Image (tube, rainbow, N blue to C red):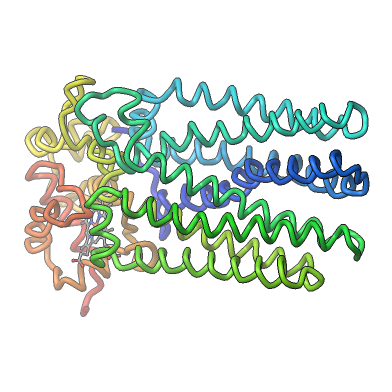
Length: 443
Ligand code: HEC
């Protein structure tokens, strides 16, 4: 076990989620935008309409600056935060998918090279060659999605991998195709909002309205397809995830689903009214508001994907608190719950203070705090307010003294969304003693 990263009120998981949601906007925009570009550029070349190039140049500059600066920074941010928050999960992923990431980075390099080549060769190479550079970019960017979706899907539904340990069994899992289709539709919708924002900064006139109308139509089709793919995706989820969402076992998950659907509907209405029907009404600031609505929808969708994975961080294999859930013979990995219950979690906590290892009564709660952080802190804050605050949740159940909390810990694994308590008797006593100190007096 590695040291624990405690983020007061928020939990470390939420930090990753915030960075990841913000990463989706530039990354999906960068992936979707060039398909629309290629379409408009095709029109500019085939119908001999040089005036469209002004739009194309503006459109690609922001992608180059915004997506590649913010996208790369937040991408690295996900790696940093996830490595500190869930080092064992990252290690598990790397042990399985290092070649997946290596391949993704090859495509990422292609993206970077071609977007610079594209922007700086406007008007300097034959138009068809220029468009082909854009298409290589669009293809490279989408290929990186093709790969990363396999790894994301694997965390949600590991399927046969849990028996075979095989790269492709985990990669082409049951949520892979619907998720790829859904993300592809989503990237076109994001790109369409962006196209409207850029086009709305052009001079009023035919070109501006034509592009806005086309972007509205693209966005509308993408959202319609996205709705179908989303249904397919939700259907393909593992049974446990479906129960968590649809049987209200974790009520906030349904709220997130509703927020995501609401955002998609709002943007669809926008595409219809301000894109297809009355492009004259589209303006930049309202477009930006719509982008923020999309961002809220994305955040909710991501929260849903992460949330319905509980109690696991890697489906069936590793719990949210970094404990290996079961034996994986193909990889010679042993499940750890029983081991920790017998030999103690602290036997694997190298940073655990030596003087606490005998669990002295006077420092019991101090020892318990470290164990509680490791066992519960990924999903719960220990503060009074914040993400699933333990003091309030325990008090709600009427658990106020160390004995009743210890009994509760014994039964933890019976919840469909929480891992079993993986520590020995002394450690349980210490954890319960600490958790009892959190309950506000008189509640
Ligand atoms: C993998 C994530 C995860 C871990 C680890 C985890 N929990 Fe939870 N816990 C949840 C979720 C999700 C809920 C549901 C909260 C909600 O309804 O919003 C929950 C709910 C609870 C509740 C309220 C239960 C009820 O019936 O109302 C308590 C109490 C609780 N957890 C205690 C703990 C303790 C103590 C630990 C550590 C020993 C722990 N949890 C570890 C995810 C987790």
